[in-house]
Length: 163
Image 1: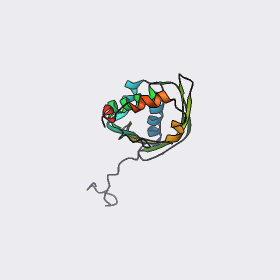
Image 2: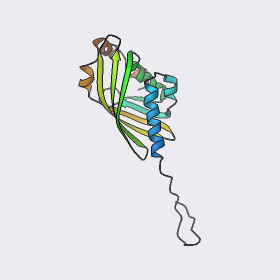
Image 3: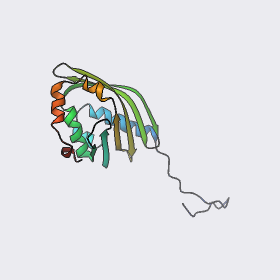
Image 4: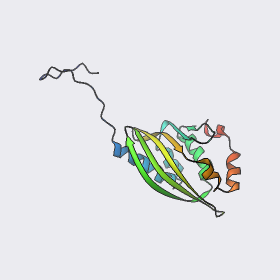
């Protein structure tokens, strides 16, 4: 708190931080998702704070911390996908938090299509993503993805992405 006093009212002046720019925070999250589907991994990494944390909440792995580890973690699942569709339902922001309801549609080169609804929780700090948690239904995914994709994912270990 400031010890300054307003000279005309003799009331202490408080140092109150400026409120977050909610539209700017939502724009950061929109940029994250637009970049993700281009598979421009270097550009995606630049959108995260140095200590950013990402996790797929329903999975047993411990998530990934830091831009390089987050990108490594994402590439394990997303590199094999031939084409994406992304359908945004709603995005709301409060403070540094941005909540995004959306549906991802993954098209595999072997013909399978997986449509999975998500709710993603993001925390934006200084114009970058500091936290990203995805909530989705494991059964919806497992019922739609090809067996070879699951086998490929299961060969990977959390140590590969800094857990």
